Length: 516
Image (cartoon, rainbow, N blue to C red; front, side, top):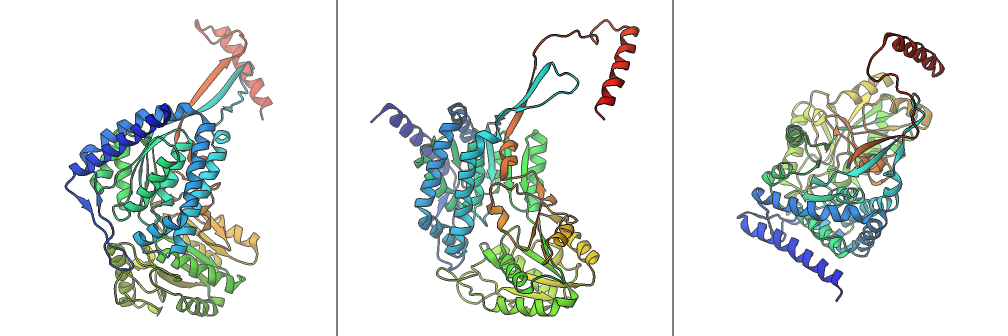
């Protein structure tokens, strides 16, 4: 056994022992049930909030060594992690499915595939994205300036439960590619998926003390912000996101917040109705509607509203709902989210809306809400104003394009939006008037799985971006270096003289006119 292997094993034992000790010191345990069956999941010991700072300090020590490795070695180890995820994809998909209630198909394609793609993108492209950037200076051509991107240090990550593998591990991979360490507080509803990711990071040869996954409850997440991290990434609800932003503001910690959406789809009169209907049904009911980019509102031109709605209802009635196997729509992951969906639909029906499908909790074990299509809804209803985050699709006709754009923008959220039209030029004109971080023409959802594209929203959907080169740079601080290549007179230095001021004023006017 070589010295390096022995050192790696000692580090692994140290971090695992630390987390084990912290978990043992906490009287709480995380006990969940499978959303699709009601069967108990393995209990997970929770790390208490009072112990988080110790873990952050350990990660910080490991981060300095990781940053010093350079891009080539970081690329090698991230690529090893990617390959391990590919090798264990079936086992990982099974864990994700059991823990969230989503079909294994979605665990593979919506959680594992995006993470693999993102890891490959950053392993290959981090060096180019973070290379020194030259900044030309017009007024002082004898000086040379450049920007250098330095890792912030330790990135704190608080993640949601709907994509319990791809989201936290994606933020970890971004942090590592930029030279940082990471501490993850996964959702208390889905800690098992993140813990599986941590095992594969260790197996890939990444220092076990560089990344920590701390299962716990809300106070543990709050403690992470207060534990000396250098940046926070939060993915979750708007209410909690406001608290995270306030805590980060008090400590002057930069943060990226992804806080959900109430995403509209506009179906124009000239749209391919079959393609639009299929896309909208998928966009509304994938992951049982528990996607921040889910289609939660559809505005369809009144001239085609009837055939479009009929086709949506036909497709929705064909969806297979259940656990495991070949099903299309899975379970609701948390009891609270099931109640939110029930409340939104019941309130809408009481106010005059009509359910063309669903509108009921399925009987039997597990947490299943039947895919629901609503008509007769208005913008005063919670099902239109609030994030439903479930398998509910309200459809509203519009009379003209201006009305559709106005209604689509009438929301506190602005994450994604969708436009359907046979004329892509026309669709783009509409897209560029929508208040959303991402607008997709003639498709839905997929851009979150494309690593080259930045992901984030406007308004109450959050601040900052994940994915893309922008996310790498978000996880760095920028040093500007300015070098004088050769010396020239500096007439602006002390002492000030009136004659010099007049010459400088004349020179300024001449030079600025040249730059017009």
